[in-house]
Length: 341
Image (tube, rainbow, N blue to C red; front, side, top):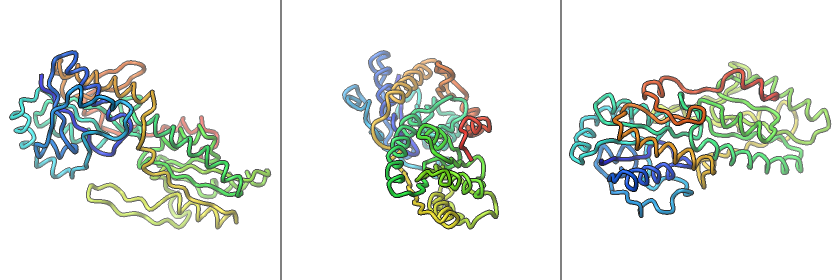
């Protein structure tokens, strides 16, 4: 068989591990030919590709980023390019395409799948917000990086008797903030799923100082917002892809806490460092399993599906189910983190 593979959307630790797994399973075990499309969907729409061999993927298992590159493509360009992409696939003699990406990538994959392309998706996002899979690769690495940063910030916060407000990734879901905040023992955590009450956040931090503690750590997902009309809030605009441009919850929240508490509060925005670098062992294993099962799905003709971790098994889930809803943090998870606001 001839199989195409691409990476789209934001980069994520473990992407190269999936690519390597696809090539190893396809070439070494099935005698397939693997084609890598460059820069995500753009490579498929413009016919930019290169062959991937065992030598091509040698040494990339622990490498961050993606050797194929990644870009975002406007939805209108994808809709207009379905026929062109289908023709490229036919000209190349492709038997299957394996796109690796998050919510936006999988929605595009469904569009192309509905247009007749042989798609088997692999879910990728550090936010862990893809439905139907228990975990996505990249999440464990992002949480580990964020936890280490929070551990380090505790020492400087205590030395200077400060409140540190740490902004982690999570546009629509708070999985990274919840897990990293719990792992590091944060004193308050705010997430996009539930607007935070500024009075409660302030009180939690104030009570900590009243007990003689010298510092506090507040963790917030980038998409977190206050309850309406409870504090001054600068709203953002949207970019060309329709994504909200956030205005900095850590900056705004630290300013408000400093004003209310009379304590020095500093914003720390961890940003894209959560995406980069070497994937953890867990993410390498999960990414490798996803790649292996994606190749098997192509050989079975199980198109229009994604690979998904359910329990300890890798199963196939329809693309339509995977993109129907985001996997948000459920209310019961707040109860497990006693200091969640």
